[in-house]
Length: 295
Image (cartoon, rainbow, N blue to C red):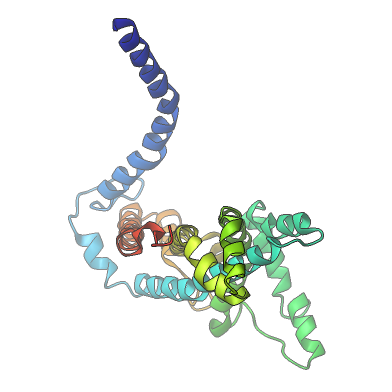
């Protein structure tokens, strides 16, 4: 009996030892920076000195037109990207889940943007969006349209960033949806066929409910990623023109690393953290983790 307990204890210790590096990394690179950022948000830290200022940074936030502009732009960006990226990802997954010649190549092709660096992708899209020599304007010119001021017009700049982000995100959603589709038991479709269901009915009554957990996960991740959008904004437009593409993350970067107002930037980061946490908790509460009766 004692030997069995001793063996169980040894297994537990080995388990703790194996997960310890992950917990250590999480503690060092996630939890400590979060706590540090919250603490800094109550100071006027500027890389030289830090004085406690209470809630002054948070009060100033909501009187800062640029912060409000960045917040509203982030909401606009989210509205433009989340649904199209999810719908296109599902559509591609449905298509590439069928018997299609060269589908492995297509899957790789659509996922490629996720393995390239944001700098390389952004530089490519800057050339695509070029007013005079860009491929997009050259194509539109064939139809007598344009030239379109893709990133230099306040009305088009955010749309251009959204198009680029949709192109990047579709492949990621496609892979997740493919995994979900391939986990659906084939006998459900066979039973539905015997009952006389056609393709659309199978999609509505089998595919959609069975994909609910995957869809829920994709939605939560899309919300988080959309509120963290930064790389493409910094490289392609740097928040311009006329602050039409500045976002929450971009404002944090500017205040922290351009103006060295670390305390103020930390308060913006805390607001972003609260927004993302709220979205996640609301989704988990009302989305029930994507669980459905079908599951």
